[in-house]
Length: 326
Image 1 (cartoon, rainbow, N blue to C red):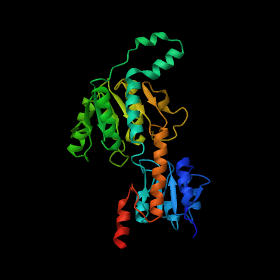
Image 2: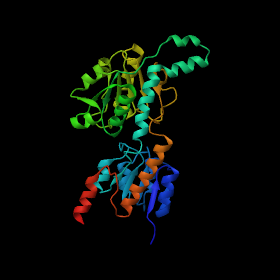
Image 3: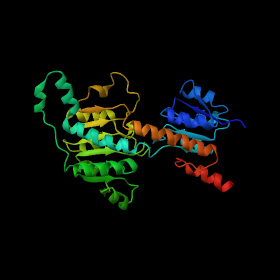
Image 4: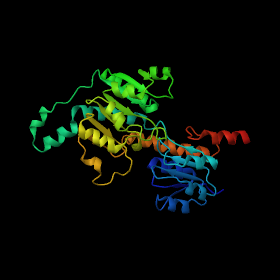
């Protein structure tokens, strides 16, 4: 019997590649460009992607696609409506990078508070007097989490343990007992969280509801000594408003791991903004996390291709419909 074909829009981690090669005919697209993938999707049973888009054009061009695999937590680069309409399950890896991103929150919070990027740069230039620009302690501070899912709740517990912090949360979809389990006080208002927090960390998916969630109005509500952290999705924060707030001293600093446009173009306006720590969408990319993502991706895709139940499915209603028909 001929093996089923899996196409990766971009090269995958060796762990995923090896697992898929054991049971399928594994290919890598000649380009992740949607028009190229749409041409090469013919005869393909499984499509694996990282950050490249899976458009309705690609899904409509597929003639025997059984599963789409997303190597990551978010599925906003996939046309979920088109996949669901075609009855194609989308497997993903929601737990693989939880620890890495939660640790990132602590790391950048410390870097901002202690002014590590500034201290490093000025010390290398011989400007020893930078030591007079004092950092701040985080012990006993208030950390506010917008979204308290897997990553947010773990980051909250870590911040509480590391800094004896007061933890606030705003998540209209969360039950109070879940917040309590993370050591957080659940607030009914985003405005209250912004006004009370010394560090605000964003952990929500990009949806029409969350796009532009943090803009000039929200930044103005924060303390002038507060820090903002976004390792979720770039479009949740208004980058122009944030740059203006940092230049004006509306808030003390920010750390962005995600951006409206990725990769961040050279000479982007954010690159010259003071008190802004930038990382290249790498919060999730530890050696341990990428290996977990790779194995979870491959095993999820193989489960669907073998007629088994995958661990994580972003559109479970597709499998439910299949079960009802069988």
